[in-house]
Image (tube, rainbow, N blue to C red):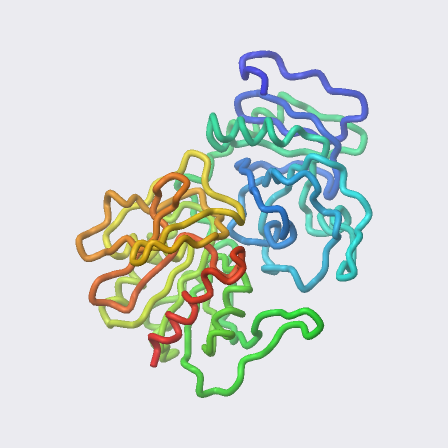
Length: 388
């Protein structure tokens, strides 16, 4: 990408979309989906499939996703692949124009779906160059904009990108969390059958704290044999204990874990003091680490994709995992009673912990996304197996 100090690239003929970085760099393209503009952090995702799940993952709140795979949207959309009903990614950046859907499961076009959800798409972008820029310079703040007439005030968009405070210090979990308690009974999806259901009330009761959860996590808990009640992010310790949980699950979610921890960590500490079994994923993993006394830090570019190798330290087994996080647990700050169970083979960052003497563990990746495809389902079985 061009040097940030140079003047913005002139608008090419036919450009109806633009990405304006906070350093003044301008990337032109063809807009699709919703009309307007949105400001957030630009990240990249290396998954070859699952773009609808990515766009509806609440963990992407406040972010604009660059897909490294060039053909995004070509199999359309369907209601079965939604991960959440709340806002996920602000928009997406793709290499090739989205063609008409070609898949027997499709119930609509990706561009139409984006427009209905208020999400902006930008096509015709050199996504390899943009990805390299993020890898070399870090995830930038930017504005993505779409105007069918091609009218853009670049100076105003640049100012908007520069004034956005960024994700560090931002608590987004309470914005994407469920606002009311909900009983969850759906199990995982199979072709020709659809979603299954849990069987019987005798199953161990898991209370899942929703910091911005993907629904497939709850489906996997049910598949592993649990009965699930989902509660909002800011639910008190007393309200959780009143539900008489056999165990508590801490979900994924967006934003800075230290900010969310202001209200989440005291609750988790209370659960640990009462020896309640706890399992955390992604942001939930970070919340557990903070409650145990560790610290988290903003990553330079983050980990996002379905091809991340993680070593399980107890036996050296390598899992192929799905990840989506821009913050990580600082493994140099782990207290003596916290064991590092998993490590990224990309950069050595922490990907799992267990607390000695407690039935409490967490992982930094998404076992419910089935990238291996079943490398990590054992984690759900392990948790439910702890509940008696």
